[in-house]
Amino acid sequence: MFVRTASERDLKAVRDLLVETWHATYDSIYGAERVTAITDDWYSLESLKRRLERPNAEFLVADDGKQLGGMAFATVDAAGTSVMLNQLYVRPAFQGRGIGGMLLDEIIESFPDATLFKLEVEEANARAIGFYRLQGFVQSGRTANCGAEQSGIPALLFERRRGEVGR
Image 1 (tube, helix red, strand yellow):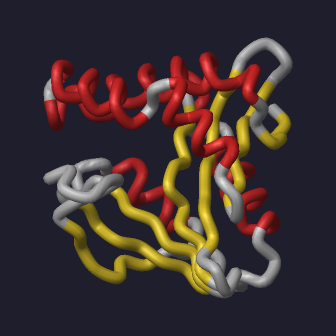
Image 2: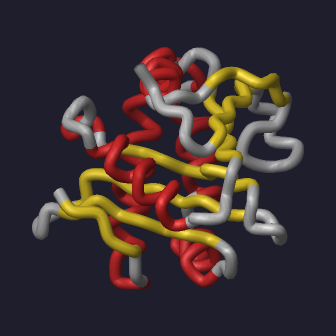
């Protein structure tokens, strides 16, 4: 796998990866019908294209030349010092192979002036929480609306300062 910037030709494969990963991760938490509704809304091709074109953002994919194994999307504030990791997903069949760490490292390198990296994670997603803790993130709070205003999806907030790494 190699990490590269996403392009418009990747969007269908990114959507497929997100739908597969969300169903594998969240069907047992939210139910398949709600996961389908969320992915249809948040990860439509139009929504992904808007992310791709967004200024002050980085949209990455992990690619083995045949298929995408993961993706990440992050945005930086106007000052360039605080990054929100909006998405980091690894296809279930590729989890545990270092792809998430490669994507996260590339996101961090993409914002050299940033000193703070933040994210939201579903509190029932123990695997993701474990991954982020290993990467040096610490819980900093909670939100009632993960991913979008009025989503009604509670999540834990995590953050990491530049230079802090996992153990």
